[in-house]
Image 1 (tube, rainbow, N blue to C red):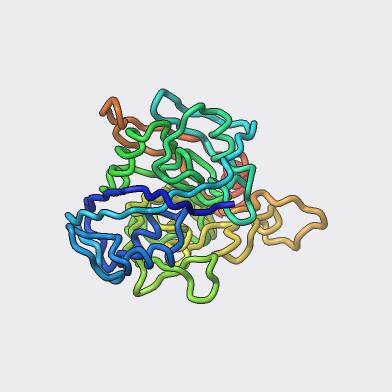
Image 2 (cartoon, rainbow, N blue to C red; image 1 turned 90 degrees about the vertical axis):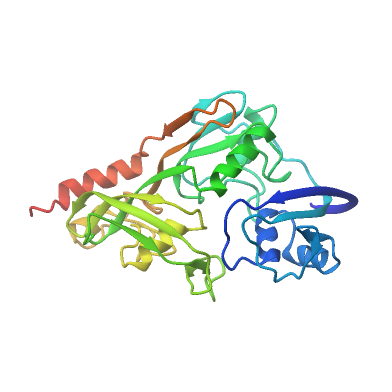
Length: 330
């Protein structure tokens, strides 16, 4: 249970890139997710948040070059409980850790997921983790959706975390995802540039919104099938559900996406266009999306590094089924 105490935590932030249309209260609420937006707004209204040495309004638009100073109350809370959950470690040193995240794993504790998360597993595996993202998210530099598999990067030290955060903010980190989408893509490659915001009625979803945050996803076709396409997605920005929403917006939703496609599963009967068989086990029961590769500058060694996570069995099974039952030449 989180509760605030009276000990303030002084924080300074330097804005390294433009954030068009980003209000100060919204920016700080996203940057410090352990604190409510209401609390952030109260601090701004009380003059406890300054930009370039001046108190500002909550609707102030954050700009490149701004220097923000604020004091947040320390949070006292139940500690993250280490849990002996196996981790598929791709690489590890004294500063960073890369893991192949499995399906059905939430990244950090949240409402309805107090345990069994990636963070609980990290806390068991690592003696020390960075606390730059707050006490409920030790080591977390970025996130993947619960049912998106693939390579995830975690930071062990605050020095490494700060360096990596700057690389993410400056969009220097290269991320590559593989996805199977519905229908045959018309183009071999393209870039989707559409702003993303919270869905107006289904708050757990995201949507293309005129007042949303600028979002960009490039893609390249890897292989085509009848009615389906295997694509490489290269997101430039990192919005919630970005790849899933972007492909849905061009009428190519990711296969078996429970939120943005026709069905939350894909069966062999569907690929064969036959009536479903009783008790048939789906080939895949979650969005066919996998974080295949990540590249960045090592935060301590200052060398460019890249790491890959192999495709999980459900996606390889889906691709093989498409090659067998949905080849283009039939």
